Image (cartoon, rainbow, N blue to C red; front, side):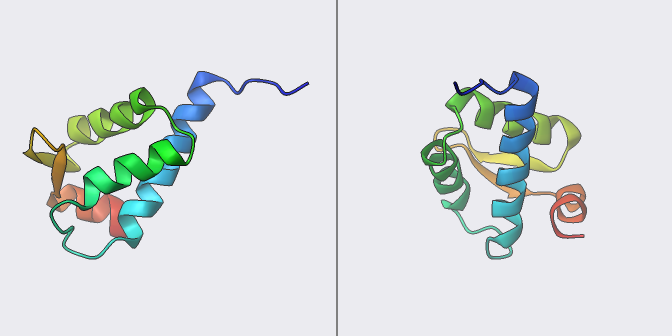
Length: 86
């Protein structure tokens, strides 16, 4: 029987997956890229709640800012450049 993973493990997996995807995206992050990353994360098996929690964490730490509230597109800040690319 398959065991369910703990919620904290899933959140960490989602954060790692999204960080790697943002890191491999073109720089600077083109418009429309982050909404595509969110949909790819859902296709990879992460829930919408998990992906939005990761985004919320990044916003709280100042790694990014919302560029478009409707599409949930982001701009990477200087702190985010250090987090994602160094």
